[in-house]
Length: 352
Image 1 (spheres, rainbow, N blue to C red):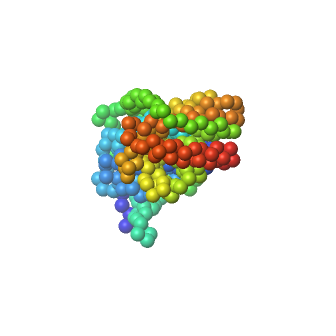
Image 2 (cartoon, helix red, strand yellow):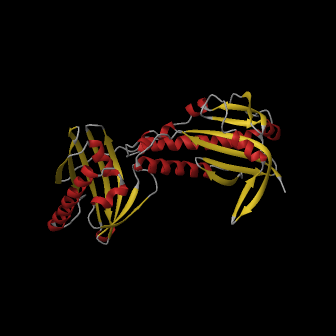
Image 3 (tube, rainbow, N blue to C red):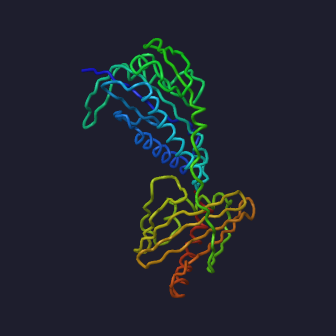
């Protein structure tokens, strides 16, 4: 039996043209994170029907929301979306195309009202019907903006035509589609609302305090390739001898991202704490915690371009006052020297 429902589709766009494995992987991480955030921002009892690429399909049966409630729900999702993009931009460690252009992502909303029918496919419930088709077709329209709320005339009839507290400037338009005909709607662009979203707080200032132990290696690869290979957590097994497993948070590489490295039977908890990147000079630091031996240290990496295809990499360890015997420290530095030879080979033959 068909039932009336509001259909709501928040749709993300803006990621195009990526070709490297890292960029594609990080774009997927970022889109997944943002889709999950949109779903978590649903506070008006919409049913999640499915994730469709870079869009979320919601519907809400029963008594329609008031117009103001529907708009507030869209604006909440929109604000949370852009707040998270600001955090990603602030904290990103990675220099790949996806991470560096995430702030260009956009979000629009299609809201329609009509009849849907729920059908069960295996253990899943799917909503179908001509009005689902109408809502999806409206994702392609002539609105001259990438970020807006679009409400069809049937949606306006259901939720109301006047805002109790108008926040947006609405305009009328329509679109004609094959096999559907003309669909009238109103839309409001979100440029002004986006400008009012506050910036996240600045991160605490991190001071690089170096220790006494250093290693240095010259790598025949551009600085960017060396840096990207270093910060790419998924490539660590390629150059960390004795690594059994890398368990990581499923995000793109950022400040405060943690990954666990199982190394010779010990778990090392690594947390990115600092980065500073330019084409000629870059720095990256991690906090490393080894609970089994009650050790916390800071690992600092500094890269200097010696030419277009040559980079000097310096590694420094601050033992943070650990009471380790000198022989233990020497053994760990010797192990890292072996790793750096592997790292040099990876950067020169198969960088991130």
